[in-house]
Image (cartoon, rainbow, N blue to C red; front, side):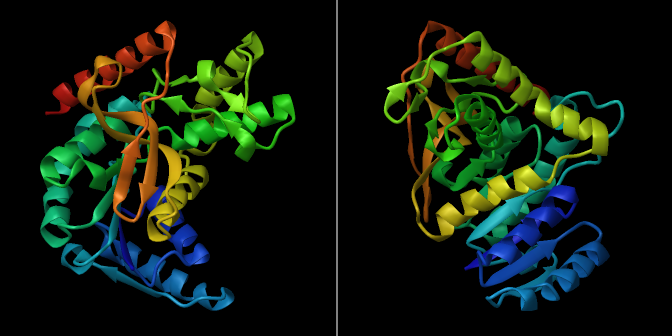
Length: 301
């Protein structure tokens, strides 16, 4: 198994460390615009491997060196600037990166699974799919996986049940229009009641990333761990159901857009996308997410 990471900012470097620590691949290739940063990260990670129970080849490379990768993680992004208030503010600059990097990924890794972390992740994943020519099942955005797990964590403290035993998802845009599927949320096979307290927990979940960014300027640990979980499901063909940004083909009447829905992730990428039951409010919310992301796609292209 060969995995390549393109973009070694705070997220890309932390993802590389997480992959190395968990032993998710035999070969890890790091690519960064400033090659010396990739070299330094590779050396540092190489010196971490002796403290684990596995071996791994970790090298710094250039785009041709990703050839033959089974998984390519695209974490490249323009720098966050004070004037950027939302993920969408990054869009125009990061769309340029998509047009620069994705054709090279498609050239060197035509059979790879491409995982997009670059924000705003839904339109960037759509652009990556369009530009690459890869199959829909092979292009995955990290989407609302991190938001869903943040919400489950908050709910677990409220109801006294382990997060892994809560079946609830946040779907739609990874951004301001995301929303929880409260109408189908369950624990132990029982429906979870829709209460003002649960809706307040969701609002706090949405604000969590903003609080982190406000205090340290970026997020990196949770998104890297979430991405590693997606990678592990691919590597081990585990077929976990994970809410990721995927191609939407008819759900709630929407299509030709990438938004988050629960999807089965295995060795070939996305094996199945679920269409959960939604009430009228949730359907309207999903359509609103779709409209927002489609507008961003149009603005960036």
